[in-house]
Length: 141
Image 1: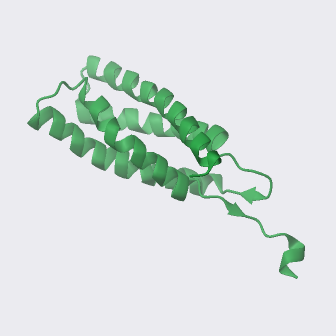
Image 2 (image 1 turned 180 degrees about the vertical axis):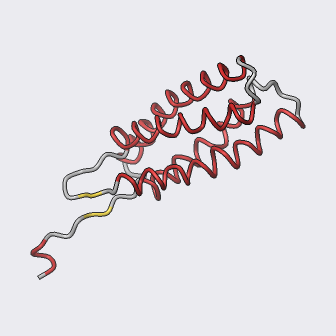
């Protein structure tokens, strides 16, 4: 693994940690306000994906000279990637932990993150924030 990739993983972890706090605090506030846990999870998910996208775009997977990225396509890919891990897999595991295993609805999201964080890094690195290099004009001639 290249050293750059290791640094990206560390930065992703830092962004992910702060994003987890955003998600979890919003989730807990919504639960406290008697919002059903699945709805609280979806709302916290949307806010946390926007937060994650911003920091991953600016800090973790930032563009270098000669690289281009369509911000709207990247945001769409980020939502798709997180929709699978953050909504489908997350909600499935949340229901599993809360309803079947009987874990507290306050603790269950932390257990879910053990599965989803590594998946999110790989999906974001190799798909959502995949950078295309621009061809120089003299290379085309």
